[in-house]
Length: 185
Image (cartoon, rainbow, N blue to C red):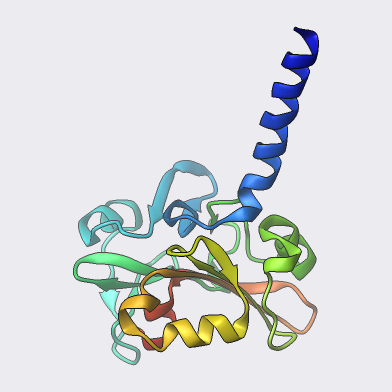
């Protein structure tokens, strides 16, 4: 009996430890107001729901289809649903990612959160994580680029991207599907 309970406990702990690094869900494509953790904006929310949390946004005249909010957050909507969230340096201390990511974190910290082997680094200034929701696995750069060529397929690839300053600290982050990330649609 004792061994059975210990084995069950071990499996629960093992599953909990691996769950955050083994996939990216739509819930992970979300930002949280750091001082009010119930104020969340996540992938797939309607413009009305987003505006209730962030306030009224305005279209970026230089970079449509981005909608900019006073909080520094920028967003792209497709068919009335949010498909991209962008946090610039100005959002530091106000908003962060759902998994606890914040502006100012290092690559090592972010790799620990999402999994070292899942990280895609093309330059010292960026770090990306691509997750294919159809085959349920992380993609490398080449696989992501191939999948993104198909517009319908690119909606099934979740992207979490971080940009870094010269000191190696994140200065912006983006949560989106691949179609929004690469085509701004």
